[in-house]
Length: 479
Ligand SMILES: Cc1cc2nc3c(=O)[nH]c(=O)nc-3n(C[C@H](O)[C@H](O)[C@H](O)COP(=O)(O)O)c2cc1C
Image 1 (cartoon, helix red, strand yellow):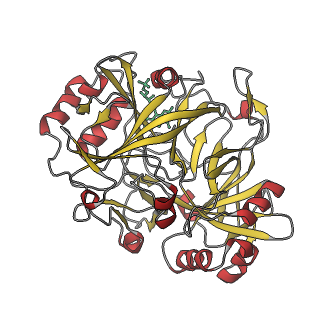
Image 2 (cartoon, rainbow, N blue to C red):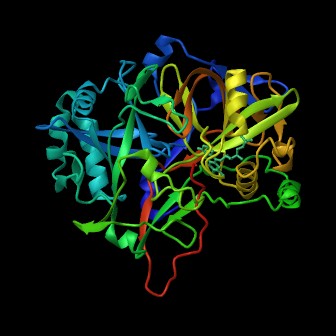
Image 3 (cartoon, helix red, strand yellow):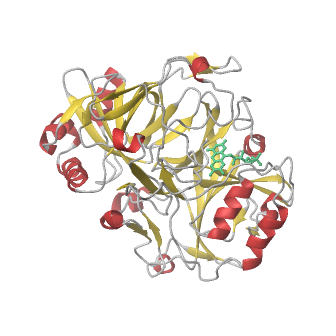
């Protein structure tokens, strides 16, 4: 991990799960399990997430025309490619001191429809902003930006304030009603209520990236998966198996150690340089944004994400898994995990997934949490490049073990698994968001305070030394 990120490290769990009355061994597996949702009194006492899902954090600003608002948002995620949409979820129901309603901020956002999702490098400015958000309550959100004492300017496409020290800014507006490529209505409302939270769909209008990063003189370093050391390492034969079954259908690589820009990433194609930032404006109509070429349909810029491994039964005794970078936790109570699965037929990159029908048919799915380990990375690469329609033994060929739970297959090599029941499907244009209410969580018994999942929700920025070529790193696959 980059030195600058050490102070921001997050480790889970802090307490031994097996000492908690809520977690029970799930024999004959090596998992501990707890059922969900939890009772209200338990939640009021401690509303931290009951298990771990790797989520980035971003800073979001908005305005109502005269005042501005500032929030810290966990798990903002790019959820759709055409139109290019970010989802941001904010608490609308009081659950505890930690999970309180962001009413003022939400009112401003709903009134103006304008937001700037931004990222500051680790360091004093970021610390200052986080401190202010923690110490100035939502009712005084309009004072937060001033309290930070940092230089700001207006976003280019709306009035939301942008921190001068942000290295990357996504300017967005609440998505407007439209139709997808099949002519079906999308975004009849620009937000949906999901349990304790409201999920806002923000269409990206412009991206600002610090000029030195856009020019490759500095790079963003993002570790997309948590680190963890399983007690029993995945067997070495698994990696060999993955190599054996790699076919000519294999398309794209994946690494959790993402470096942007680098030899394997899309180049950031700016329209202009303003305020020391390279700026790309996105065309207003989704049709204009469609680039059928597989490569050019990639995300135009880095946005931090991790991945959920979405599991389903393709048939009795036939488990499937689909790595899903656009997976986000959208609600705390009930806990809702929402993967976004491609249903549009645009090109090879954006084609209907086999998993789509399987989730629709079963009304449930599993979501296992991967970690940074060669065998797991190989398995993500394999299962994220081949469909269950072409390989019925996809999971075995990827070298992953399965615990054949009745609800959805559980990947037994991975540390955490959420069993989810679909409460709602939301069409977003190219991807469908499935709101999966978590019914049970499984955690391997070798996940402990002594052997925690180790995660950092922020990216680091490193300058490239003149003699040093940007490392030829293959990018994390985009949705
Ligand atoms: C790291 C990674 C992230 C991915 N994220 C998504 C995603 O968010 N949504 C999606 O529809 N496909 C995503 N994919 C592509 C699917 O995993 C891939 O098309 C898979 O082969 C589908 O399998 P299936 O047809 O058996 O469902 C991703 C692939 C990789 C490697």
